[in-house]
Amino acid sequence: MKQIIGGNWKMNGSRLAALEFLSEMKRLGSGSVSSEIVLFPPFTLISLMADAAADAGIETGGQDIFWLEKGAFTGEISPAMLVDAGASWFLVGHSERRHVIGETDDIVRRKLEAGLETGLRGILCVGELIEERDAGRTEEVVRRQVESALKGLECVSTENFVIAYEPVWAIGTGLTATPGEAERMHSLIREWVAGAISIDFADNTRIQYGGSVKPDNAAEILSRPSVNGALVGGASLKAKSFMDILKAVPPQD
Ligand code: PEP
Image 1 (cartoon, rainbow, N blue to C red):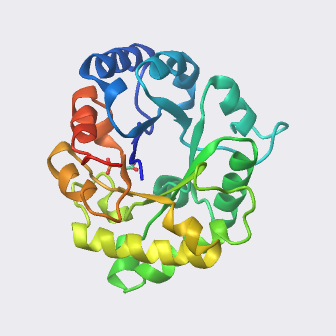
Image 2 (image 1 turned 45 degrees about the horizontal axis):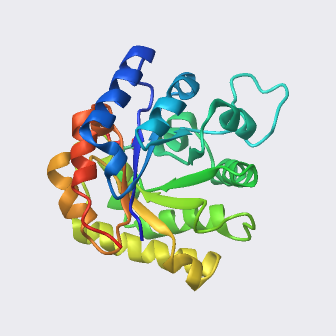
């Protein structure tokens, strides 16, 4: 399975820095790595970046999406607007959307469905809070997030869908799940995906790990058989560190 490495810039970046980042990525060889690369800049930078990103072998996506096409929804961005800006991907359910903005499982599901129906490819983020982990509720929480997003979803395929397991306590904190912990959760997520859709679908669905992935820990995480890529926040803001993570991907079929 081809690994997929995502870079989530969150609320960071400027026009100048974005174009410099892309020319540096190209110079460092992003066009010839074996993984799929997707960058999620702020919405304001997508149309500026899309062509130069494609030239550097990088796809672009929105960090979020709304579930309706147009109308009186101040501040929202529709799936068609993302396509128009040149994006081919979107993220849904990132922990900052769930826990800072307050998005529910139902909202995440509606966004996922709308984005996939429009022909975009989506990454569903799931993961437990530290309180949930400490209370022994990790499996219950992540299972609920996976099943509520996927059960009965018709427009989903292994080409247009990826899951990112991101334990919330590991995002931006410098903490990471041990490779063993990540593997265990990835295997469970695959079981829940199998129950929600099918075994064949689950076997062929890529599951990324996210949470403080850096150049110095990427190789260990990405070499685990159940890990099919990474979603990277902080370390995707600099071309050198993002490229070092891409270079840490083991040879793949
Ligand atoms: C993220 O934003 O999805 C993320 C994993 O961030 P970081 O790599 O900075 O922990």
